[in-house]
Image (cartoon, rainbow, N blue to C red; front, side, top):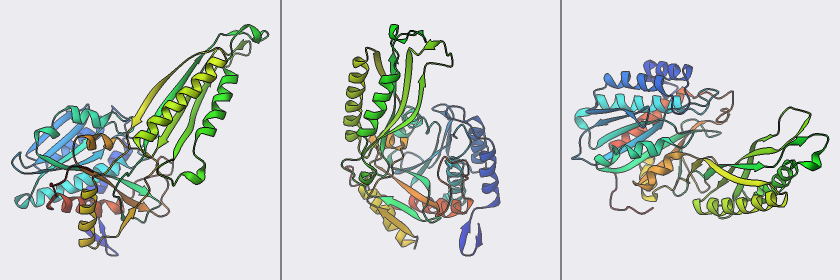
Length: 379
């Protein structure tokens, strides 16, 4: 490892690997390049077991066996259509740097360590595919940990929440079917345009005011993602529309209630306009409900290493499929600051900051080597 201004720096090979991943982004379900690069790197680090093509293109590496408690760590692999604008390339690099630490100290491992490189996070399918593989169940998995870089937080700071870390969300499509007709005689058809306008108004009214986004008990949000209404044919009055929204809430129950209310209101509007109506859900995510005692363990460990931490009371509004693991195993999800002025996730200017790779990898390695509390199961 290198040091510069007392900041831990990742080795050149890991930074180069991260850049290779960045230059070859692949969306959910197509992470072939990342899979091959991870497998090539792991071949030099001698895990006791490597599982390939898990849940499509996932990779799981294990040091140790079933006789010891297993501590699992997950990094996501997929990119956005516009590139690695969320930092998953950096997350993979962090786990691979952690794997180097494990290999260098393999004679002194206190726990079985499982590193999971998970595909298809952006679509919400990947975690369940990993779970359905049964690999984590074949080890004595006592805890699973995940992390994400977070812009607008000082680079390298660790960010914890003892309860909900990220929100529940779902995409919903409203399908409105009427009847096309000639544009000169719109009264002879059923144009969904007026219903679209009414639904937009209703959705705007149903979202919490901006001032209420800090209220964990009541916050709900509906974000318009897109609309398809008719087509570019000026002789035809539109007869069909689709509306795409993302719904969010800080708890699974509040999202479920919000979804029910949204469906009820939109159905009433569509029927008032004599339209055929149905909805479909897409990319649904549960809220990440951390195991409180494991967050406390991470906080205590970070403090013992003199690391800078922040403990938040309010969840982040974005979503993550890591929540699915927590339905099966105790676990905790935390954040790593990407820099106070770092571009936002998913923005065109975003690129993962290499300066946080080494400190994060070393912290994860210390977690893997720690005495994980196992006497509590409930969050």
